[in-house]
Length: 382
Image 1 (cartoon, rainbow, N blue to C red):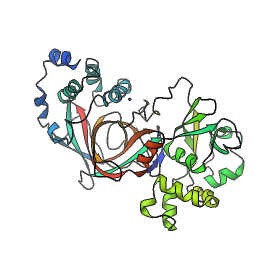
Image 2 (image 1 turned 90 degrees about the horizontal axis):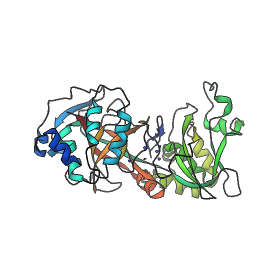
Image 3 (image 1 turned 90 degrees about the vertical axis):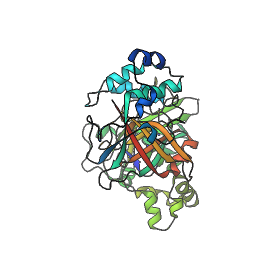
Image 4 (image 1 turned 135 degrees about the horizontal axis):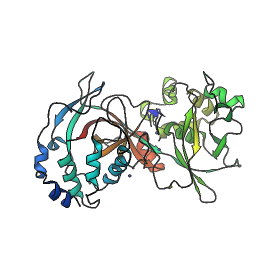
């Protein structure tokens, strides 16, 4: 990932404050003799029988409790749910996903009302609360998949390397492994370069997201995924800048840090070395579509604006979640059905999510500024 409070992306990491992605109910209703849509508004028991969490509590809710549920365009969420089903069918779980996923095959992907009826007929809704505080509100951040120009060999323009896991580490990683500053000067990384880009700060943000795309000069797109780290703790270079009063709180974003780096080119390495963690990449197979988002922890491509990263102690991976928050630096509502398809070490808490904005600079602009309050509802099969 890409997701921003984390090295959060893919099955393992996302770091700092950003993270990178992505996808006929009429006959079902008739065949299952389901209750009318409104029957789905009955509250269930006080807590789900099939799922519990050590850090989150779940309060029975109704579909009417979901702000914006009727307005959400669920045809945009449906491909992401089908991707979740692809993985959930293969996983053992205390939750019976197989039945609801089988029923999804009868639903028209183009019929938003049929999709809405499918969820209302087959799922119960639970408001998520933080167990420690009993609060129903938590932090919603954003992440994305970086896209930048680059080369598979060093050139006069592309001088900043992105590294694969050093060959010497593939048998046994040092314990402890060197921090970033030592790695960069030790020579152990020599020969493990897999791509070269122009901007060291952009490269660091790609490490934070844990994945990205490199547009090569011949028009090809190189997809890089997360391959591991040096197992050092993450320390935010945004906080490093704040502690030295180099930036203000409002500038502690991807955009603000990039602007500081342009003003202080001679201090960029000093800033980057403030974070001892170093992320390694691997080239993804050539048959992976450049249009798909990166794989999240669930093992399926992330879907822009319909995938989130969650705390695995709080919510089940792959589950549908209804999210109510606001857009970055705004009071404009962002209320959508999303899928819990990713996780990250900095995503901690019951009501806590990292919202995947998609790929490229515009997604990065939104992700880098997103730090909103929000609420979440977990959807579980009846």
